[in-house]
Image 1 (cartoon, rainbow, N blue to C red):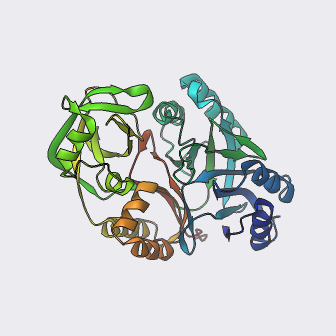
Image 2: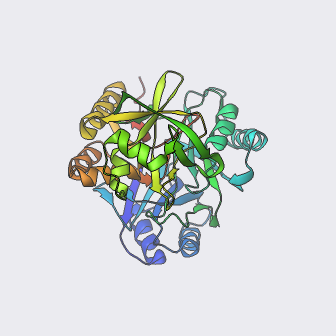
Image 3: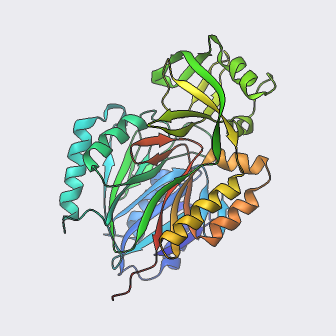
Length: 375
């Protein structure tokens, strides 16, 4: 793995700096780029294709980048996967608004044919980059995971630096919107797919009594105006909230005996609440109690480090609301220290993927161990 970072604002100049830092591309099998939405997508895709002709490549826009030096903004982070350790095939998921089970099965089957090789799936995982504005992640993930069977899946939803207007993915020189990417990764490295959050359920519940599930908008909780009911349950002031307050007070939903975070994106003019994840009438939401984010993340990374006999690097997808919460609690520096310590590379997301689940306020990723030495 080779990692390069550029803070240059011009797309062509940024890619030029990235390629120079990576060096000889002869042993690189795949290039993955996470870019601030401040870059012009078409110029970025053209520069990648021009400077790396013939090299399979993918990328997406972000809500912040995770670089070797820690979290950055308005930059570009590139991961060059070496042929000796990784074999990666990638395909776009076009028109997510119409993506279903049939499309998921066909796409996974096609990627598996391209990947070829042995039938043993233990060295495989799936990697998704999904449009963070599509509001279809749950349907897409269900279709993909059904086709992947026991192959673990991890990823993140693309961002646009909290503008919520224009995200993108790039695949082999093409900019695609209302789309995502699925990569199948075969690696000789030991790895673990994981998730980490820092919330515990409380006894306080809220039931969704009125909502627009297609747009993920809740108008009533417990038969009360949604914002008022949420503010009362979390003891927030009823005046107009900030994004940091929503970041610090996610709600939980219980699925299969395990709790998953459901973050609120914003309060609307009518007092309804827009969510990042799927929501429906009758869903029971549990108010969460906050643990120390740094302690919880360190516990996860230490466990992975022990399982892998040492982490080499982590490809990570960290919810932008975790970043906002870390900033408001003034612990972003401690989070950055952990990311540097365990070599976390990735981006801040509008949602996180973990197997068949679309999550919020969660850190998901895949941790890689060091190259196995022949016995």
